[in-house]
Image (cartoon, rainbow, N blue to C red; front, side, top):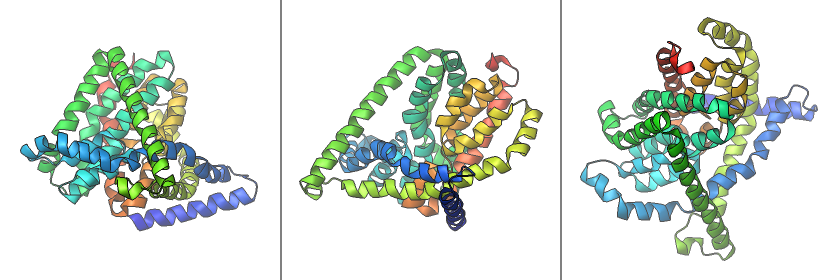
Length: 358
């Protein structure tokens, strides 16, 4: 799987690079250039947490890990509340009793539940227009309803048994259920809690970045047990190199699939903007959130539901996993794409009576 993806990325690099040389005539060159322009924002959200991974792991090992040991659960699951590319993977590695569970928690759980909690929900509620916030909240609830499909698919592809997946994910899925109920019944209070959580996370990220930079300047990173800031920056740069090819390839796919997507959309009651949104979300959910105002009600619900599992499937998350653990790319894509499609199916069936679309 990883070798096929790497070949496609190389094709994308050629496509984007040649078009940039020719003056960005087809638009692929702009996507090629965008990959490098994303480095500052990625570094801002990732480097601090990676630098603090050892410290956070130490605190969790002394605090919550014994409780998980008592229940015969792997404490690596705690890392699943962070996005895979915001320190979740590194934290899972540090906490894991079993390397397979560490990979599963850091990648599959972190790319689904973690990304939804620390990125999609807070950013989405801040981006979408007031009249679209009810659709966004309902879409997240429907997405969380279908999240177990993604976690089971990713777990099986990671080599875990279904029984173990269900047992180990009881805690995160309970939190997901509480979040879903909160968004459905007490959206105002729930968003205040998320807002406080995101502010705390921002303090941790910036604090880690500051301490990491100072430790590097004073040459004391190893003495403090911190991940060196340049090592963390290396992860960010490797993601950017991957995006050099994946962004142009995604644009090409968008052009090639425009007609079949439009035809399929007519069959299930979705407009062309809504159908395009699914593909865009696979790279980044941000442009899709900006397009919500142009979608029909069903499209808004299904696109947001898909984000819970499918966000950044062939964008930053795939780039990150390919750089740290390429053998897990199949599990990542299976959980995000197949799980995302099943989630859309669940959301379509639940919302097909029209009540959720009002």
